[in-house]
Length: 312
Image (cartoon, rainbow, N blue to C red; front, side, top):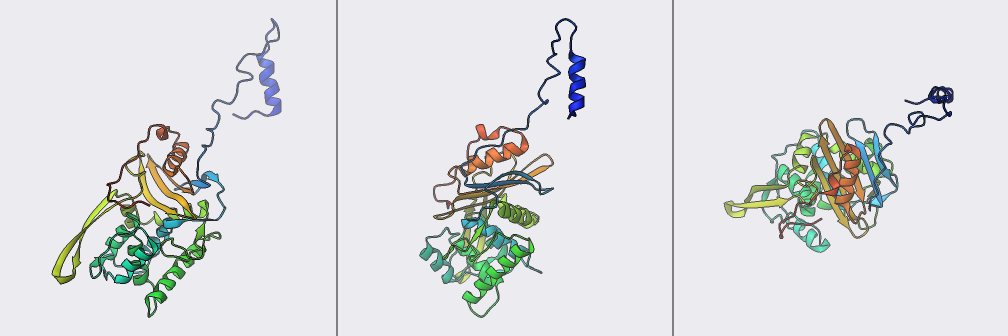
């Protein structure tokens, strides 16, 4: 209850005693419960929002532009899934160019093999779980338009920027389909990236992919053979923080360690971002605890990845 100045005087007057004009403890008591202090995080930028209302729960340098590394792939997949008439069972033939690209860039990979026929759905998992830049390349090449691979990937990046404009994100720009930026013109802010994540998470197929800790699938290989792919989710918050439901890691020289995350407890879902954070998982747990009013971060033990799994 908030008292007016006059109300305070009345409350004090009632509390006066005839013995010595002493005030009772209740008259000058502090508010019943002070708001929880905002957590301290290592991330140079961070943001947390309520998924249902979009209300800001936490912000740190929320509107400062930063590189976003492979969290870029959230928009890559969002564009694919929101393509009119998208067929997730459509077959895509893996090109040698996709493998050459990850070798040249030293990029994270789904280890797609040349000549294999994989579905769009499989490419979603290959892009988001092991953060495969080869899988992202395949999607950009498939869903862009133009006569050449270069034309098609450029067209696809244009679609990513068009979606950012549609979402009214004034501090976000893409020059890459996977976060590998030659000129540094691939940036966002914690607030904008949280909004991209909030948008992406509206799609049931996206939610299904990012909540999976691993995915095993088979694809048609050349000479009528079958190849098995097994991918592990680089997001170690999954299986570590109670209620975590996604969504994407990212690491780059300029970007530093990044994490976009989401969790649900009861009827509340929170979506957050940590950019360039030396302890991104602990940061995320602290922010989620702040939003949920819990203390999970203090005892959280991170899920470990197999030795041969991709790191991002």
